[in-house]
Length: 110
Length: 113
Picture (spheres, helix red, strand yellow):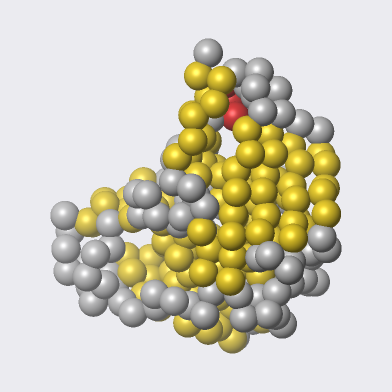
């Protein structure tokens, strides 16, 4: 089976840095995706990791450790518009399916 | 512009009625997916299709049906057998290759009373 765990809620201050963690257990592994979802809207793709290490994209970075079944999403220079849910999703071996975590609701406060 | 469209955005039905949610994509993607999202829950896979005329059940297929007669279209029918149909329904598609992300449509919020 597949299991994805991430914190339910987090709060951070505008301008700060926040790290959202995700642990996963999958039958085989073909990559880890992060999505952003604003309330009532569709998820939008943020990042994909399949190899260990850090991938940086502007203010957002994502890290993966395959041996630990662990990933995090790092958001720098937080802005109010970053208030959203962040979904971690893992792709299993030989599969085009994604298993999603329940999402982390991030609230950015002034 | 390429993308995925879902219609309508809001849908209201009486209990006991079947309802069909549309999903169309012009991204030339082979794979398409239907998810359901409830408050405080992640996305749960209902059905998916990797090629035309073929589809597989996801984790929560009971009470739902789909068809894939055209590459561009993957409609979802919520039947009266679905015990708790009120939810936010998201359709997605993806291109070939493991590294390709899924693109999501804007979603349909279904309310059944």
